[in-house]
Amino acid sequence: MGEGYVETWQALIRGDRRGLFAGLARFGLRLASWPYGIGVRTRNKLYSTGWKRVSRAAVPVVSIGNLTLGGTGKTPCVEYVGRFYSDRDVRVTILSRGYGNYAGRNDEAMVLEENLPDVPHLQGRDRITLANMAVEELETELLILDDGFQHRRLFRNLDVVLIDATRPPSRDHLFPRGTLREPASGLQRANAIVLTRCDQVTRDEVDSIRNWLTLRYPDKPVATTEHRPVDLIGGESSESLEGLKGRPVAGFCGIGNPTAFRRTLESLGAEVIDFRAFPDHHAYTRADVDDLIRWAGGLPEGGMIATTQKDWVKLRVPDLGGRPLRAVRIGLTFREGQREFDEVLETYIPSDGEPGA
Image (cartoon, rainbow, N blue to C red; front, side, top):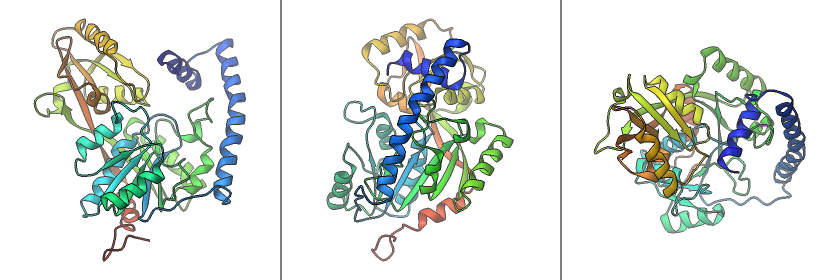
């Protein structure tokens, strides 16, 4: 799906486009979601009843996933969990499918490699083979399955599901009418739920989402978090976020929820004078870079270009069009529920040389 088609689809499903044609298009998308939903439910039923085979790794598997297409801010959570175990001397390896592969590694892998240099990250289509490789060759004691909620072939001991507070499942629809990969009832398989980007909605909205979740899934612990900016990278050294305040900034990104990044820039006091959104996991071409250079060159003196760390790791240039390019590095910060979440993670710390049950 090309960039223009993605933007048109997102505008339709959000309801940004009005009129007869937009209404008919949404109706058509809803009709298309019915066979998709039947297929998803059938697949899950086959796994749940044992008709489809599930493989077990020799060590515990912790899955970090979501219900939706696009970004829920999963990478900072994977980083948090990876650091949680590595800080406790657990040999951990991250496994991922590798969507948006870029020069052998995708953007998320490059970010995690930069922020967690001591944690191996294996990418590939067959994550069962990767799991065996990690255990046999890297002597891994615990596996983190990145974006693994729908990857039912590999048994997981712990399923963590992320929900973006700006796009809760109660207001979403099944693909292609919405961004849900599967019905919200799939949360029954989760062991823990993490609400992300809670700083980008009101407290009442966060409470409403939590109430909706706890009413339907009372046995699931629900944590609330923010994706809090840490610093600016891209220059010779990291820089304070204060450098954005009151400054004319043009932003761009290729992530699942570009609106969230724009809100982040605005929350840091930047004067966002222009903004460009690329498809999620966008692999920047020479033509893209040339276009960005021309775009940046038209910005006022004293302006700055801002992007996400996921985008910056694929460009790694200090400026565009004579304007400094900086990436906002993000970290996961808990508002509520961190102790309960950590207690769930601690269940799988190896004891006396034996991994958790």
